[in-house]
Amino acid sequence: MALRVQITEKQAKSRFKSGTSSRTHKEYSMNLQKGWLYESGEPHPREIEFCLPDGSAPYPVGDYALNLDSNIYINGFGSINVNSQLVLVPAKV
Image (tube, rainbow, N blue to C red; front, side):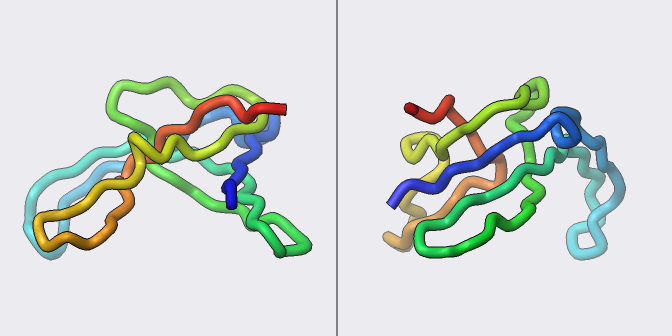
């Protein structure tokens, strides 16, 4: 199963968000971008918002797939986790 993310003209920009964490009281900042997530077996895509990798420009208009090597990792307890900053690669047509 491959997850496909489509970036449209309207979504080809990022939104900067910063503040202070209510839990840790530390300052944070992040660049967010929206896209359409296409899931296998689902009739319609869902709009998602995801964190861009630090220092990255917004993804341009196009179709992308999740880069599993960069997005999935095994934590110290042996469980599968997903990075909070999604890395996308151009989808193969």
